Image 1 (cartoon, rainbow, N blue to C red):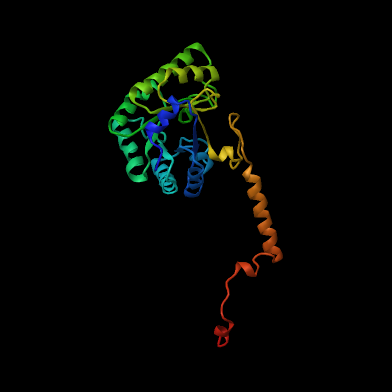
Image 2: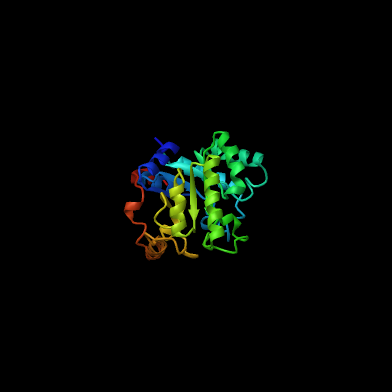
Length: 274
């Protein structure tokens, strides 16, 4: 049985930390699900770590849905959140509701996530009123990376900190069930977390959030283009994979692989007339 929105919110009230990871394909989603992670985000970061785009901006709804379907097929327990890509919800509320519904109907997700605060609160309310759970996302919002002039910590001045608090409160008022705080100063994240009744999920926002999220390719050392400062690498699998491939190449060239144990047998008598 999958985690539910109410269970996630109960975890905040009980002071139980919430974990969230990204996943973009069946095999990885199955591993994350079986490990017991409550929330899986089919993040638009797949544009960078899976498709090789420089930013998340070029990612389309069709690409997102393709990966979200695979993640849902690989999971049984985790609550799956589809990340609404750039311009899938900004043009109109009608577009936003239509695209949010596609994550639910076509991909089988249980919720969606979108970026922004006060400016998208009305859209969030419209989506929630349709029966679709929404996770908010404020602070560094990667889809606005060009406007924000890069990956910079947000909310470092009094005015910007106040805006982020207002964004968080607006999302809660609109009906969001949780909100991601990305690259927000630790003390500000602590204040926002204390003010909200809904859970906060931090990424580069310190230890006081109700939960944490990491990009799976970052934490496992699979994405080697760069390592975000806020990421802890729990493994360095890129090196392990390269070593395994090197061993495969060596054994194939030397004739060690495949051996008899890797082949199939048959009755030699069946070959006598060939």
